[in-house]
Image 1: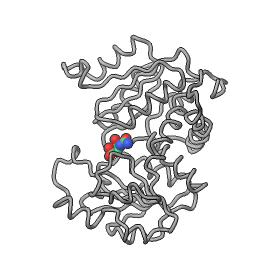
Image 2: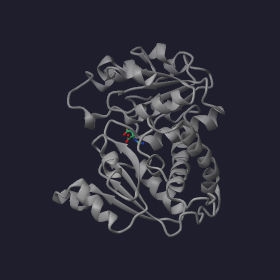
Image 3: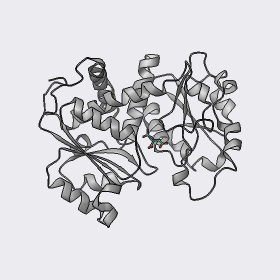
Image 4: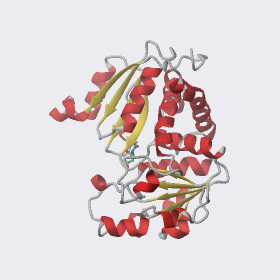
Length: 312
Ligand code: NCD
């Protein structure tokens, strides 16, 4: 398998054909989670290590469940309970885990590029589960999967991504993926949270939420990433919410059948009105369900045997 197919490190360098292959394969796995027996033998005898150096609820659990539903052996390692807290380097940690012969290392790390560094130094397949402010490829895949299921297509849709664009790996991966598959992507946030040169991603840039939301098919909200903020980029949560929080007034400006997305974890009342988060247009929990199917597809395409069919 070529290096680009052995790992999933980012959306930017992924071929469009491979993106579509991940999405189409996820359709096959989606039904497995709705069956009475939620398990297929596909990755029997394979080992997946979830190596998480940053907090996670959805992504880590979702990879674990995905691996288990494929019959892989899944092991979770987090920085707090591991020798990383004793000062071991990332490379030493990975080399030691590698000596136990895993097939896939799923990795979340606070430094952008950490999974790329490891991918060059291990025999295992590496999946980037979020690297600093860089990319979060499986989140973009599950978002695209959710939009495609809700709208039947991606091409021609207007997707407005609003919030902390500077620190959001979710926004970056989504901008790459959605523009590649023919959607128009608008990004919106306070000027202090718009990184210079963002239009190079092929997106339209707004600092006025009402204008960005007008006629949109999808409103994707982002969390304010306080843990990554060295400096304060907005005065107060209330002020932020007034200008960039999703409320009923803004929602009315979008298409009547627009869907509302959020990767989680949500700051209710800051970037999204709780009534909208729980309302009829919200697909937030559909995103979570899609996450398992997408990650099953990723693990299967990276670690399955050549010529093996997905469900056996
Ligand atoms: C995101 C992340 O960690 O990048 N969460 C997720 O994986 N669902 C977004 C966030 O933390 O705001």
